[in-house]
Length: 142
Image (cartoon, rainbow, N blue to C red; front, side):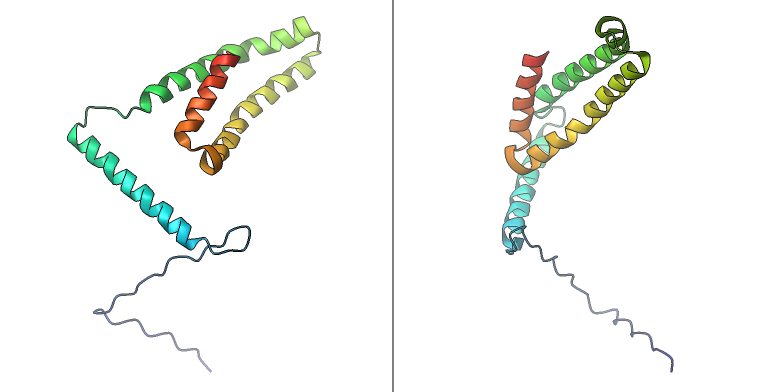
């Protein structure tokens, strides 16, 4: 017995896709709050787009915080990393293998911790507050 293929819908009908049903970690339905957040984000994006369309040469205010922050972060990372092996080997007294392990551990954590910052930003602080808080931490630490 051969299985028959489902007939294709006629050209004059449209198929509507329903939004995905989401459940929080607590087991409660979060589709209403998610849709409200999506609507708010869409509204904010429309407002930003209209502002940019009025004056396309103007940069968003956040750029003036992000660019110096990224510059300082890269400057510190690429300035410290080449010196770490000699520091660990000559001044701390570690053997070359252990010094190299520490340098690679520093590089790994430098690339891993932005994931934690992203999780904090998305879940708790918000992107602009995260930029401000971590910028203050960078200034204190540098």
